[in-house]
Image (tube, rainbow, N blue to C red; front, side, top):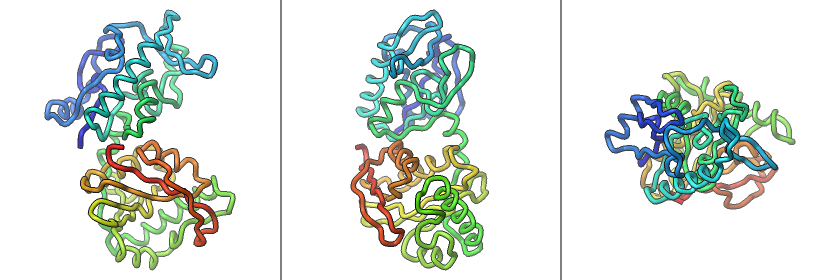
Length: 303
């Protein structure tokens, strides 16, 4: 697995104020040759140190302005383009970004007021990398998700496993589905999951050894896999757990060239998440089982 990482996270003095923002894990990844450090601002032609800059929305477009009012968007867009080219050339399979940055922010950025307030959003480089279908983590989620593990389900796991499945699918359908509360076949059934585990691979998702979700997948051939089902406890969603699960799965089966999955047509939040993981919409099918359309998404390795 080839990583790229925001250079400041690995101890390079390339932040706007010239100060490093190093984490031992990322520095060690670079030293071991597992990760390639990069800095979009430097690639775009900006010096270190440089004026503090934040994203502002002007005429419905993201612009990057300094605290002195100078528009430096051209440097950030050039750096984003060069970063995307570098990632594709290096065949990077996972890119770890410094959250909050007007370039690398992925999940959080400063609000443009230079007051220290943060809002949900993405930096210019994160936008560009995501458009290319590349696999992104912000540094906070990556560090938290290091404690995420996949364990083959045991008989004593099924009760709690199904409780979390029921909670997750019912919460999702209650919030988003026009068809009422429910879920896919057997989502609330211990016997269904027990039988399904004989047809495919059933794993518990654990964080710090605590069961927090489930994963059911099948291998169609030596080079094709299908994710039948994945769910995370609702109170823990949005913390990078699912992203880490996909990452671990691709690490485990590095020979798989194509992964596929489906999700309800009304679950646009799921579709957005899968697209952020590099999946692309393949087609729509009508499912008699659930009574509505499913969107089929596929991801081809290094696409």
